[in-house]
Image (cartoon, rainbow, N blue to C red):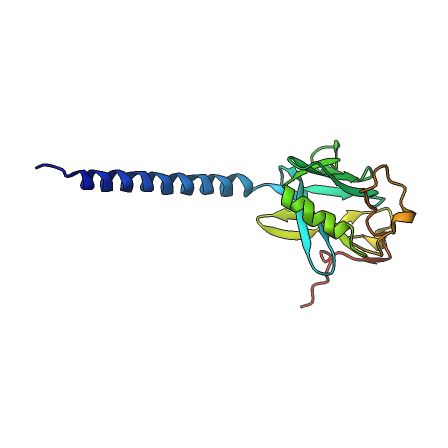
Length: 196
């Protein structure tokens, strides 16, 4: 039995294509399994027409094993660089404390972002009004962060306010903006009463 060149070419093409599909499938499975049990702190930055979610921190435990504290809100947000681009966040009062340890985890000041995300964030930050939400992402689901405060009656999850104008800001960079100052404090959805 003699193989023709076209049959050999077809066989090699099928083997290469099958190997490629298996490699992509294994890579996807690896990514799904490694990110499955991680907790991400995400900032959602948006305005009236669009929003961007940026993964800021990776925490290695489950969603209910952290206590989040933030007596003050984010002081400034800005973007720098092109390739790589970064989101600069000044939030010194933020800390996450694991229930099994007392060491606080601080919010990162410099977060890598893709260049196309940088352009979208810049457009949002230069709009007349915008919002910034601190979220948790676990198993692909998002939840507002419940910040513990010393005032038990006002657990803060959502901050809503008006954007500052350029005249009101005291930031080191001309591109940095101050997120809205809280005008209304909404309680988180976690302590909902259960009715029978």
